[in-house]
Structures are given as C-alpha cells and as structure tokens.
Image 1: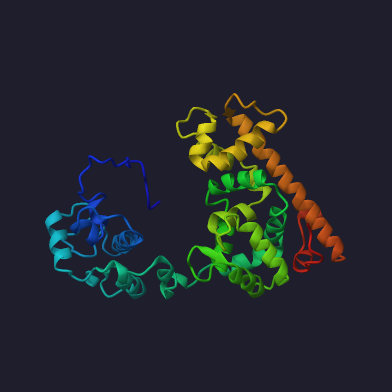
Image 2 (image 1 turned 60 degrees about the vertical axis):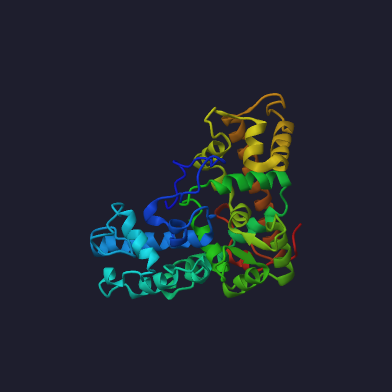
Length: 359
C-alpha cells in the first residue's frame, strides 16, 4: 500500500500555505515553495523516494533518502535543514547508495528525481523502462486467458445487461480484492501498450490479434463501445474490470462486503439515498436506488438498504450475468458447429470461432 488517507483532513480557508505532506517524500517544489497545488509530478517524485527506500533496505539494511548522505538521510530522521540545502543547491541524487549495483533502477531514478517537474518522467514513460518490463508474467497469462474465451464472452454479454446491472457490476468490481482480479489486471496491462492506464480501440483490436483470438474488427468496435461507458474514446481500468468480471467474483462475500462498506462509510449497517449520492453522484444514485426499490422483495423508497438487501440484489445480478453468459456461449458454440461440455466451461474452439454476432 503506497497511499493511506487515515490522517487526511479537509483544508479550509483559515489554513496557511505551509507545505502539506510527509517531509521525506516531498518534491523540491513542494518543500521550497508555499501555496503550490499538488500535481502528478509530485507523486512521481514520491515514487522515486519509495523506490530508493526499497533498494537501500535490501542493499544497506536502512531506508535512505536519495538526495542525502547515509548519515543525513536515514528513514524519517531527516532534518529539515539538510533537505533544504540539498534542494536549494539542486544536488543530484546520491547514486553511491546503490554501490554500483541495480543499474536498471538507477536509470529509472535518473528520470524521476529531476528538479524541474516538467522534465520529470510521466508514469507511462517509467513503465516502458526495460527494468520494469523484463520477465513480465502478464503477456503469457493474459494470452492464455483470452484464448480460453471466458473473458471475451464476459465482454460480449456485458453489452446485453441493463444500465442498472452494469452499475452493480462496476460497484463490485471496483472493490474486489486484488487477488480476485489479478488475471483481469494482467490482461488489461497487455492491451494497454501505451502504458497510460487506458485502452484505445486500436489497442483492443491489436491485442486480440497478437493473442490469436479471432474476433472480427467490426465486432471489436461494438465491444469497445459497450465497455466505454463514459464515451471518452478509451477504456479505463475500472470500465475493463466491470465488463470482464464474472459471476464467481460477483457472488464472493468478500467483494460484496467491500462494496457495501464503500457505500456505508459511517458503518451504520445500511445505505441511504444520501450515501449513494455521495459515492455515485445523483444520476448513479437515482439509477441504483430507483431500480433497487422496484425489484420485488426489496425495501420501499422510504427506508434504507440493509446489507442483506444489498447482497440479495448483487446475487440477482450475478445470476443474470451467468445466465446471459451461458446462453451466449451455448448459442455461439452451436453456430460454430461444436459440441462442448458446458459443465466445464466454453472450449477454446468455441472461443476462437466467433460465429454470427449475438445480440
């Protein structure tokens, strides 16, 4: 975990313009100037400090600040004046901390620990460094997952779900444990060739081709449009998760509980209309709460949503997701002339033969 908002508080007009943050992770512009607004470049600098800590912890047995000597820069025991002198004089980062090892990581830090924020490497550029791309397990795992077909079929059936169903999918997907969506994360990284955290239409088409998944380009365009729910022209990681997540994760008690806690920040044990608006915005809350209260056996509009109510609703969406998926895969297999044992899932043959477009 790199970020923890446990000590965060809202800033008001009476607060002064003193630098805000943990001193050792502050970028030079944050440390030296007053009233600066936080930027992505400041986060990149902090990542450079964390990377240095990780390497020096192994190399030296201590957490060392990259801009200071071993004696001055250990862990959180860094004096303000030492950082001030280093930043004021624009001293280069201390490569000697790596003892002529970890050259790949050092090259990354050469791009990160840069005084001018405009010259500091962006996250997408850092991810293209050879040191970070060597032995990436994503390509092989993701290719295998795509060729097995369940992920592609999930995307196809996603287009057949209602707006309400998609909202529930998105809500649960956003709060599923990393261990539950690890393979989906890896496939996203394989498609995201530009490493900018989004998948373009061209990247989606090329990704299917590179992994030997036979999906006609016109069908890919339809798939892309169904996933791109905010019509931004690209698919974000959260949109990808919502479209590819399967019924098994949706039925997970851990994922459902995490989503409920997100909507119930005060831990009241129930969700109000206000809670939904705060988390999803008015339109999202109206859609979710309105559709929820119209379902048979769900609470009326004048009372809140309990955890059992929420779990029941998510389970209904999961069952619908599974039913639509099963019908689509069965029909596609029939169109392709295959005889698969659907008790064990769709076969590779059914997956790689697209057949007629299903609606």
